[in-house]
Length: 35
Image (cartoon, rainbow, N blue to C red; front, side, top):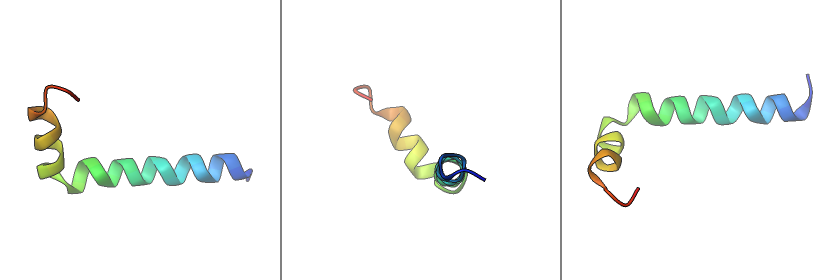
């Protein structure tokens, strides 16, 4: 397994966890018009 695919998978897991386990974070991003 190449180093790039490992880091890509790690970032995918991180972002998936960020969206799925933080509904408050998602709501704040949705309410912020500048983002």
